[in-house]
Length: 236
Image (cartoon, rainbow, N blue to C red; front, side):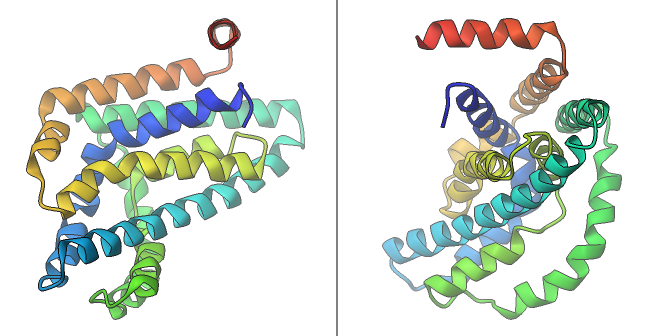
């Protein structure tokens, strides 16, 4: 990982953490149900199986990032104009996600509805694997549930498509996925304190505004060169 890649991956990690208030709403019920299905097992077993489930979910994100970044790499090679258009599209998607988190505009619900068509084919296969039985089973369930329609994931995938490198796109989505784990994992482990903080209105608004600002920053322009130069100076 180069100096130029580190800020991007760190930003994706923070995006996952800030956006996890939305993840609780989307995945919290699933995580709680999976945890309850493991009742009777030791805390260590529950911890391991739930962690394996989330690793499967992150793997799905990384694979999707690899695919979308490959498409972006191909389209970006057509012309500089297409590459620039992809970057603007990714920035707009991030701004839209920020507006969605704050509740100021819920346009991403339409995108989630579109993704639900694919989910109709995947959901029965995911349910057929329940309840969690062992480590491979938990990982497989995570792989399938990782395709649950989610505007936050779609926004980040649009960002990954602009990376110009399939591997970098996969790493970006993996970093984002790991950022979402703390809140949904703690919810599954029945820890409410952190979850309550994440779901608080103030937290959601701050997270949304931060993502909006990041979307504005990610738009091509001279401001990016100044920020990257500053980061490079600080890391030297």
